[in-house]
Every structure is written in C-alpha cells, then in structure tokens.
Length: 134
Length: 136
Image 1 (cartoon, chains in turn red, orange):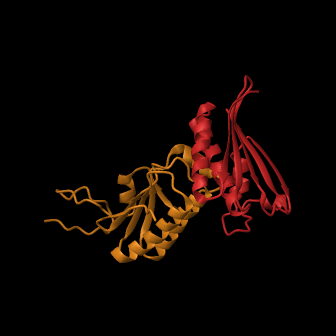
Image 2 (image 1 turned 90 degrees about the horizontal axis):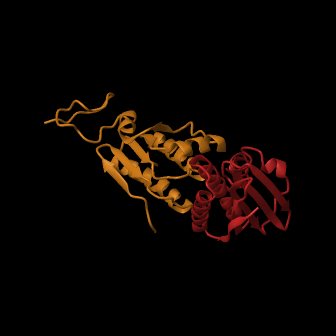
C-alpha cells in the first residue's frame, strides 16, 4: 500500500474544523473518490473534528491519501488528550449526547465511513480512525 | 466579526450561504435572522444552500432551529438548492430535517413560502395563496 499524501492538521479553533473539511475534500479528490463518497467522508470529518474540539479539548487529525492496487481512498486519524469516553456503546448510540448537540456525531460518522475504529481511555484521550474507499 | 448578509425582498428575507462557514458564523446567522424577521415583519425566509458542499449535524440543527424560531415569529422558512450528494449524506448521517421545508430552486422556494419577491408587470406570475397585489 502506498500513501501519496500524509498531513497532520491541528484542531484547536472552530476555524480549524473548516480547514479540516477543505483538506479532506482535496485529498478525497486526489484519491479518486466520487462526489457522494467525497461528501460522506468530508461530513464525517467535520463531525469528528468538532468532537475533538468540543469534547477532547482540541487535538489533531492525520489525513492520509492511500493509493494501492487493491484500493484507493482516504484515512483519517483523530487524536485528542481529553477526558476520554467512559461508555463507548452509549457514545455510539444515536441521540446520546453530553454536550447539548444532536448526538449524531460519532454514530453518524461511523455510518458515513467504510472503516471505523475508536480507542478511548478515561483520563488519557481518544483516538478515532475512519476510512472511505473508492 | 464577519456576517452573512440578509437581503430583504418584498416580504421575504433571503440568505445565500456561498461558502463553507464555521460554527460561530452559523450561530450568528441564526440570531441575525430572528432579529431581522421581527424588525422587517417578514413573512418568509429563504435560505439558499446551493453553495454548500456539505451539511453536517451542526449546520443541520441550525437550519432546523431557524425554521422553528421563524415559525414562532410568524414567518415560513424554506431551504433551497441542496445538492444531491448533500441530501444523500444527510439522510445517512441520521438527519432528515423534517421540520424544514425545502425546494429545489429559488423560484419554487418563493412559491412555497407564499411570498412574491418581484411583482411581474402583468401581475400574472405571482404565486398563489394570500399574496397581496400592489399593481399600478
């Protein structure tokens, strides 16, 4: 598998969420994703970037464009050193929120991705990896 | 602080979101619109989102809120110009925006909220409903 582009962006201000969306869009196009797939991965990125900011107290996202013979796509890794998530099942339930939002961020991002993994340790932080393949 | 312009046309308020906007700007629009509805006695609000490449849960909730608030202030809201890929993604995200009226384009949107924005010279192109004519 070859990664043709690999960037790490900070997520510290709400303006950064906009920059993450733009960068994910650029790399989704470079990976050859179609318009609907681009829209899905950008929307998922927006949800997770906002979570990183609002719940994780800020963090980073690594954006990888992957072009391999078997598959092409975009992989995103969101990391924060926030409070962590105690109950992952609950956090992944539609409508569950601790922050006054709609509670669709995590569950929605999972539905919009082909791959979704989440690791969270209370008191240490959260790491979410998603991917959308062509 | 930057703001999204709100245009008044007849008894309607028009907003066109042309570029990707951050959350604070979206919240500001929500507040500005409710104030402007009261200040202008507008009967309809049309929000053009044809420039938006994505609508996430935050923006979706904002559209829902604007529709709900304007209803309380006696104005109808219609969202026009949603891109097909955005609609597909919103539904998969879990947001179907049931509280928001939508139309495919500006013309249909204006007809839906029952507010004519330009009086045709012959007066025949005004939308149906309780629209008031001011011809002559």
